[in-house]
Length: 153
Image 1: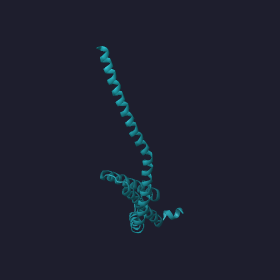
Image 2: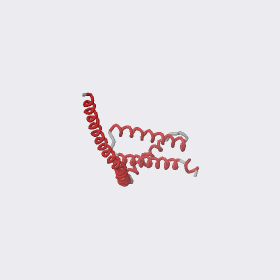
Image 3: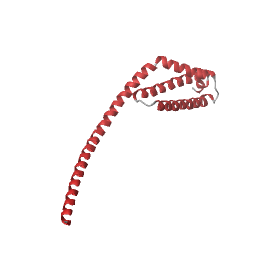
Image 4: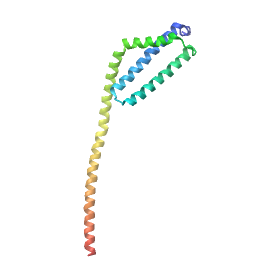
């Protein structure tokens, strides 16, 4: 097994699958973007963070499997893995991911509504109670003022 990963073909396969994995993660990232709308600025920030993480992942692979040596075929393997993923799997993974995330988003919205509807009702009721208390307090203070004026006279 160790001999296989030390051969150039084994290293080529490792980077081929790394290209597949990178594109798979990017599709998951795109699916989240389709279900949860963000601003353009946040999209740029997310892209930068994603590609920094990819760079760190690739540097890690280069040091673990190739002792830090850069070879041209490693980059070709990553590109071939990405291209194969894009043309063979991307459309299906995106559709499935968007449907799954949309399902979870609708469930989350229902849970939030279940939690916040009683809270909204309580706040409306509480507002009415505060209003009634304020009206009663105003009437009481008016009565006290009238009585105090009568006493003074």
